[in-house]
Image (cartoon, rainbow, N blue to C red; front, side, top):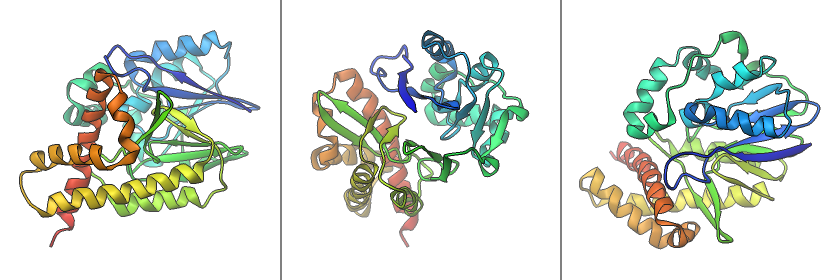
Length: 294
């Protein structure tokens, strides 16, 4: 099997490289995630330049518009292809108005840059519970989103955002949790344990890269989530306005989490991007921890 991460370039400062689609060429040709709607043509152009004239399946890790927004255009270009996604996500792909409204509410102007997803014909979609492709294992991994899936195919583990966002900056690893509201730490940890129960294998991330050993990376990420709970929980216990807590948490996490050390050598535009997503991830933790308080 040959697999390749295609970068889907964006027009926003600090967002390159950040979006990607994994292309796997084997007995079956499939993609894992397809990026935002407004850059669908860039992904298609990249696939054409690879000489990829057939896509059998698109494996969606989740339906967030930065992962599945380009699906309708991709399926239009490859009429033989079908998409596999969580059964609970299908209605939002067929009729994406609520998905789009929710994306605007959470992401604001960023959602407008990603672009609105187009409707996908229901007959082009396969619920994950009905997927029985040879050599493909579908793993339910709620955490980043309740409808999140991971996929293992011939000893390659495609985790979307179920194992965080992993980048390499000038040779230094950077790993950040993606824990937006509504976030449930116990559910996320159960998903990681489910992935750890698989055989150790190369791990493929959506944002943006790969590592050789899934067990090593998943254990690092599991420890990181517990570290974030302790650091953020201490500030939540002190009380105060949620937005003030979030700002304080970001500063403290950048100081105390070794997995974020590469932040200091990132370009300013990438730092700005990471602070936006870090704030959203911290907000998920803050709301979760506040809800837990008696």
